[in-house]
Image 1 (cartoon, one colour):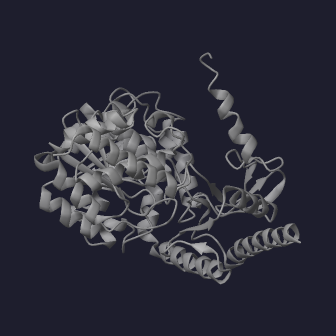
Image 2: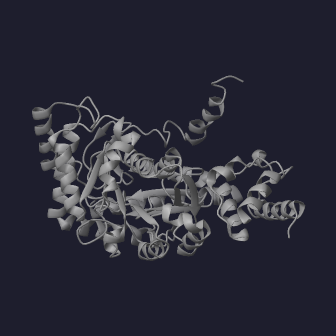
Image 3: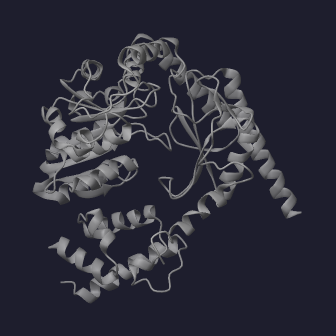
Amino acid sequence: MTTSNELENLLRGMLREFLDDRRVPAANIDQLSDLDLESVQVMEFMLEVEDHFDIAIDVESFSNARTIQDLAQIVAKRSQ
Amino acid sequence: MDLLSKFEAVAEIPRQLNGGSLDPTNVVMDQLVSATEAVVQGRSVILAGTNNYLGLTFDAECIEAGKRALDQAGTGTTGSRMANGNFTAHQALERELAEFYDMPHAVVFPTGYVANLGTLCGLLGADDCVLLDADAHASLYDGARMSGAEVYRFKHNDPASLDAHLRRLKARATRTLIVTEGLYSILGDTAPLAEFVAIKQRYGAYLLVDEAHSLGVYGDRGRGLSDAAGVLPEVDFIVGTFSKSLGATGGFCVSAHKALALLRYTSRPYIFTASASPSVIATTRTALALMQKRPQLRQQLWRNAHELHAGLSNLKLQLGSEISPIVSVGFDSREAALACWHSMMKSGVYTNLVVPPASPDGSSLIRCSISAAHTSEQIQCIVDAFANAIGAAESAKGAASV
């Protein structure tokens, strides 16, 4: 079973790769609300997370996640 | 920081887009000469970005019908459909739309935006889900948000992504409304509706198709992409607008479900907005009849679409994968698209500049929409204006690298 730390690290890795692919600089990727992402990119990342974990995340919950920890909680809850 | 501080950043937008005296987001048409020509800042321009697919805005029969309605019913309804703004002509248009689609129910709204807001708000409740195509129009997204339903998105035009999302929603799939468009307004690509219908049937979900840009364009009778794909009876709700092929303003929803008729009691955007003016309803009804009487308009539209696409293909521009009346040219940067737009205006051609965040995939585009009313000469002018703009950009690049 994946621990919350493992899940956070997994999401962190996915996000880092996503940002690197799009050349979006980010000093602190844990703080999702500070990332300089366009709305299209936020949605692309949401679709990527949904596919990776085979879960459905509604747009509002995803948008309300301010940190990587918030996102990990959403993923954990939807994966149950 | 106070209430209005955030507008300091907004004020940068027109400054960034302004290449002289023209802001692409605020072009003023000083005079409309015809369905395909206007005067902007004292110069004649060819309109190559107005969604006037059948060119009916200056049709003599439509204008006459509008004038007659002004004389007979006045300038406005001064109220909502639920109160005093429900005229015989509004109901007649609803009947005509229902007959046109062979569906029993139709509701008319004062704009296309309100049609989407009103339909989604009226249909969906807090316990429902809405599954939107990732590129769906802002009005569909706004309506979904406003309804209070849980909003999910699937990858643009991707049946596998739609299927996966419905599977993940499990039992809630039967309370899910899938929302897609027919012809997409920016890139001019079309939804795989037959596949979407097969998937929604497998899960017991519902499907709404926005035919805003495909009404009058697709299908033997101009009923849109659902009809062209042979799945019109299987689509639960069709929404559309009068402000493109029908040359007016307004929107509608048609359906075989009786729930649509009851939406008049559940949809706040329907209940609390003033109804369309009699003259607008009159020109819409006439245009709807003409669209059916004159299939040659649609045939001419497609001939023109192919002609423009061929002309731009010869210039080796970045074009979309499908040929349609919407032809978008991709650019490597926002600056390049902006420079091209200004150059096109100087050449006397009005197009639409589409840059992030307005573009669906984050790209920068010049969007053209062709009309049945464009002449071959005008289409050649559009192609020549692109050639000039690209040529000037190449020369500037060459000069810069010397």
